[in-house]
Length: 150
Length: 137
Image (tube, rainbow over all chains, first blue to last red; front, top):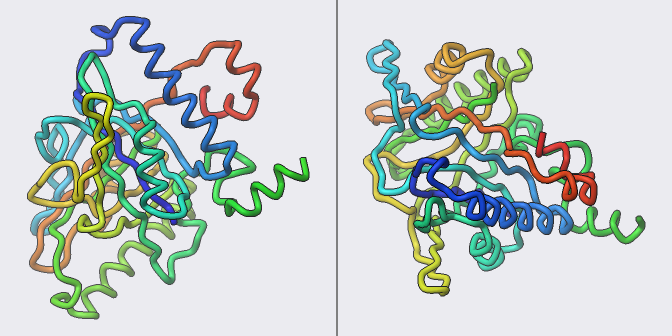
């Protein structure tokens, strides 16, 4: 089962973060990325640019209205995401608990959303941004088999 | 530049939406995907299960708290996303305006967010983790 983990964090100014704090957050992400990759369950991961660069598009009566900013003002803001292949929600929660959400001293949260399979849509259209060659989209059993062989 | 396009729409009871309307929306998505693939701009796309299946995880005083539901109640709900590699924001807006964001009679919008390139990691880490270097450009 594929789960999307949406990272919501306070949109604080990165320049307010101490180098040590930035380093701790980065290492936290690197640890999660490295381990989930080793287990063959990492499908995609990426940070988003700050919400000041967001744009919201609505089509009304055939006209496109584009406005600056995210679609809703929220206490915390979407800052990035992971897509992980987990056996069940419990496993997804365990991974989510390890993803760093803090920024500038305040903690955020992770929203876990199951990806939906749509019959009739080719796999090539989905797949959510494979990271590179090997692992992306490889079922866990096959990837661990490959690891054992290696 | 890669852009994430987040689809926010009013969740409606599946049973209340006529089958032909659901088919029309699915076909419109397929048309966008097909053309985006043909033009080499589609990085990925996926619908999400309904927000009633969402779980939110927070850490408080060293304890993990997981609660049912999305992180915030909003007028519209995150229903899926596209990721596209566009020349600029104008191109991203043009694609976004073609992505179906509501059923007839409903409301919805697309939030466009540029992806941020992964920050650099120390050389020592890169050397010991060759497989990761492709994501930390």
